[in-house]
Amino acid sequence: MLNLGDNFFNDSILPYLNTLTSLTTLILSDNSIEGSRTKQGLANLRYLQVLDLSGNFNITSGSLTRLGLANLTNLKKLDLGSCGITTIQGLAKLKNLEALDLSYNYYIHSSLEGNFFN
Image (cartoon, rainbow, N blue to C red; front, side, top):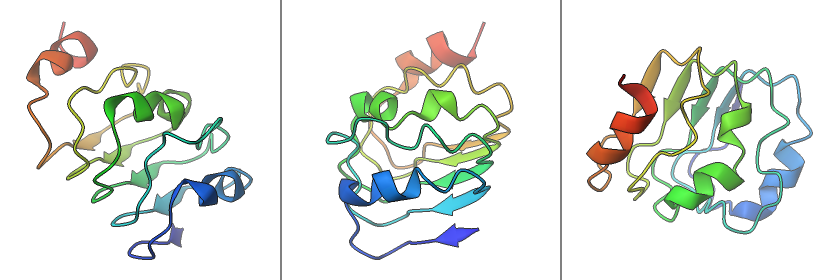
Protein backbone atom coordinates (compact mmCIF):
# COMPACT_ATOMS: atom_id res chain seq x y z
CA MET A 1 0.00 0.00 0.00
CA LEU A 2 1.24 3.45 -0.90
CA ASN A 3 -0.64 6.50 0.37
CA LEU A 4 0.40 9.76 -1.30
CA GLY A 5 -2.82 11.66 -0.63
CA ASP A 6 -2.81 15.43 0.00
CA ASN A 7 0.71 16.05 -1.29
CA PHE A 8 0.16 18.46 -4.22
CA PHE A 9 1.58 15.88 -6.66
CA ASN A 10 0.89 16.37 -10.36
CA ASP A 11 1.36 14.18 -13.44
CA SER A 12 5.15 14.34 -13.11
CA ILE A 13 4.99 11.63 -10.42
CA LEU A 14 3.22 9.11 -12.67
CA PRO A 15 6.32 7.71 -14.45
CA TYR A 16 7.86 6.92 -11.05
CA LEU A 17 4.71 5.25 -9.76
CA ASN A 18 4.42 3.24 -12.97
CA THR A 19 7.62 1.39 -12.02
CA LEU A 20 6.06 -0.01 -8.82
CA THR A 21 4.65 -2.99 -10.68
CA SER A 22 3.89 -5.09 -7.56
CA LEU A 23 1.78 -2.40 -5.92
CA THR A 24 -1.75 -3.49 -4.93
CA THR A 25 -3.11 -0.30 -3.31
CA LEU A 26 -2.40 3.26 -4.43
CA ILE A 27 -3.96 6.33 -2.85
CA LEU A 28 -3.47 9.57 -4.78
CA SER A 29 -6.47 11.46 -3.41
CA ASP A 30 -6.54 15.25 -3.19
CA ASN A 31 -3.53 15.96 -5.38
CA SER A 32 -3.25 17.72 -8.75
CA ILE A 33 -3.23 14.67 -11.01
CA GLU A 34 -4.71 15.50 -14.43
CA GLY A 35 -3.67 12.63 -16.66
CA SER A 36 -3.33 15.02 -19.57
CA ARG A 37 0.46 15.11 -19.68
CA THR A 38 1.25 11.44 -19.44
CA LYS A 39 2.10 8.79 -21.99
CA GLN A 40 1.61 5.62 -19.97
CA GLY A 41 -0.15 6.80 -16.86
CA LEU A 42 -0.46 3.89 -14.46
CA ALA A 43 -0.82 1.16 -17.10
CA ASN A 44 2.07 -0.96 -15.76
CA LEU A 45 0.46 -1.43 -12.34
CA ARG A 46 -1.21 -4.68 -13.37
CA TYR A 47 -1.54 -6.01 -9.80
CA LEU A 48 -3.29 -2.88 -8.54
CA GLN A 49 -6.54 -3.75 -6.76
CA VAL A 50 -7.38 -0.42 -5.11
CA LEU A 51 -6.92 3.00 -6.73
CA ASP A 52 -8.11 6.22 -5.10
CA LEU A 53 -7.97 9.28 -7.36
CA SER A 54 -10.72 11.18 -5.55
CA GLY A 55 -10.38 14.93 -5.19
CA ASN A 56 -8.16 15.38 -8.24
CA PHE A 57 -10.47 18.01 -9.70
CA ASN A 58 -8.68 18.35 -13.04
CA ILE A 59 -9.05 14.77 -14.20
CA THR A 60 -11.06 14.86 -17.42
CA SER A 61 -12.92 12.09 -19.14
CA GLY A 62 -10.14 11.73 -21.71
CA SER A 63 -7.62 11.51 -18.92
CA LEU A 64 -9.07 8.20 -17.79
CA THR A 65 -7.81 6.64 -21.01
CA ARG A 66 -4.42 8.35 -20.81
CA LEU A 67 -4.03 7.21 -17.20
CA GLY A 68 -4.25 3.63 -18.49
CA LEU A 69 -7.10 2.61 -16.21
CA ALA A 70 -8.47 0.12 -18.74
CA ASN A 71 -5.24 -1.89 -18.38
CA LEU A 72 -5.72 -2.32 -14.64
CA THR A 73 -7.74 -5.51 -15.00
CA ASN A 74 -7.19 -6.64 -11.39
CA LEU A 75 -8.74 -3.44 -10.04
CA LYS A 76 -11.46 -4.15 -7.46
CA LYS A 77 -12.05 -0.67 -6.07
CA LEU A 78 -11.81 2.60 -7.99
CA ASP A 79 -12.57 5.95 -6.37
CA LEU A 80 -13.13 8.80 -8.83
CA GLY A 81 -15.24 10.94 -6.51
CA SER A 82 -14.92 14.71 -6.93
CA CYS A 83 -12.80 14.50 -10.06
CA GLY A 84 -14.93 16.60 -12.39
CA ILE A 85 -15.38 13.85 -14.95
CA THR A 86 -18.40 13.72 -17.25
CA THR A 87 -17.94 10.32 -18.93
CA ILE A 88 -16.22 7.10 -17.94
CA GLN A 89 -15.40 5.56 -21.30
CA GLY A 90 -13.00 2.64 -21.23
CA LEU A 91 -13.86 1.23 -17.82
CA ALA A 92 -15.96 -1.68 -19.12
CA LYS A 93 -12.79 -3.79 -19.33
CA LEU A 94 -12.49 -3.75 -15.55
CA LYS A 95 -14.23 -7.10 -15.07
CA ASN A 96 -13.02 -7.51 -11.45
CA LEU A 97 -14.32 -4.12 -10.35
CA GLU A 98 -16.47 -4.48 -7.23
CA ALA A 99 -16.71 -0.86 -6.06
CA LEU A 100 -16.78 2.33 -8.14
CA ASP A 101 -17.20 5.73 -6.49
CA LEU A 102 -18.35 8.44 -8.88
CA SER A 103 -19.80 10.76 -6.24
CA TYR A 104 -19.64 14.53 -6.69
CA ASN A 105 -18.93 14.49 -10.41
CA TYR A 106 -20.80 16.06 -13.30
CA TYR A 107 -23.77 14.37 -14.94
CA ILE A 108 -22.44 11.02 -16.18
CA HIS A 109 -25.58 8.86 -16.55
CA SER A 110 -25.41 8.47 -20.33
CA SER A 111 -21.86 7.13 -20.22
CA LEU A 112 -22.81 4.60 -17.54
CA GLU A 113 -25.32 2.92 -19.84
CA GLY A 114 -22.78 2.01 -22.50
CA ASN A 115 -20.16 0.89 -20.04
CA PHE A 116 -21.90 -1.12 -17.35
CA PHE A 117 -25.54 -1.81 -18.11
CA ASN A 118 -26.69 -4.29 -20.73
